[in-house]
Image (tube, rainbow, N blue to C red; front, side, top):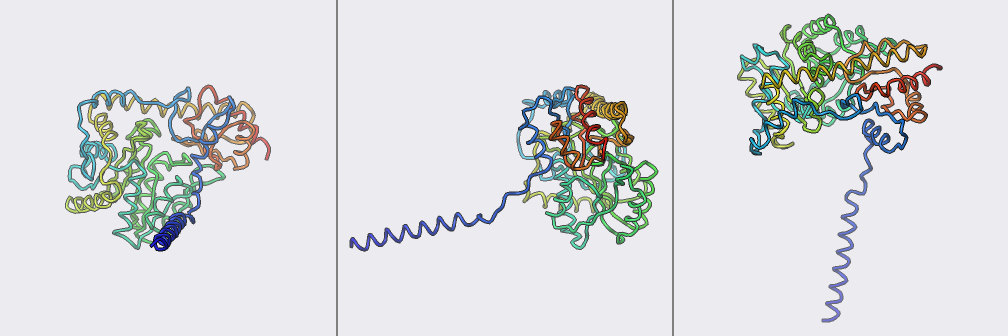
Length: 424
């Protein structure tokens, strides 16, 4: 009997050891993920003890003291919301009021497409979530399709469509020599893409280049899309933040609508309302008719259900409260223009400082580009020198977040850029 109990104890220990080995080996093959290049910049900046350090890598607005900003219209909306709303689940499709206001902002206050109920729309987890919902919708209902993505683009666009298992193709966009738009190359790629292709377009303030087509160029792009029966999917992350005028920033979308296109649109309130952490956005798809819009919306909701079930309520309440109240909307329009104007002013100041230093390079692109970012044209090696010698942090593609430039650091930044670019 004693031997039997001892043998049983040994057996249990062996089984326990085997189980432990099995448990530890299940995920032993998992390697650490590569660091996000933008978040890595912020980590390095925070670890730098230098009092002169400057972070122009982060894609979030800062005031002229380099501090995060909460808009007054947002504060007031929160005051009105506080204690007056319950915390029940939103429907799978999100806040109806927020969606209504978002569609008016993107498609126009008096849009016939809104009146005819031809737009399928759901609240999304900011612009990223809207893009991902559309990518999954594209894969599910047009499984043989692919997506054409501009070169370059926001890095996460590649991750989104890759993880949705939609094949990606590149189309020409940026012209490195002029630091502007390669319009001829862009049009050539649109013409040569198979008929009925999906294209990802930045509605305004292209990230990372800050280079947008002119109104006339957008009209030519729209015409060629019509000829080729391509589908335009607009990522509109900066409406209002680019020029200070939400109507002007939606011009590309309005041109395509005027020309009779069906479109998709991802909207985000991270930049233009400063709601970065609230993850407030909207996905909309213009359909043939109301019946089709109902069907498409139902499928978008079905895709969202196993992802996150339903979207968060607080950011949606802030957006709908601001856009649904004429006084608050007027305040928002004033504040978003103030943010855009500060960015535009810093572009001018950086250019002027570089010219005063006698830079051998042309910096016209600094003010020709628009939005959060300036695609400087600096090489990775020059960016490394900025970091190592001057404690200035940005992504190695030379993208400067103009939100991090202030009246207090613009001269220092210009001097450092001059030092690393004055000789080849």
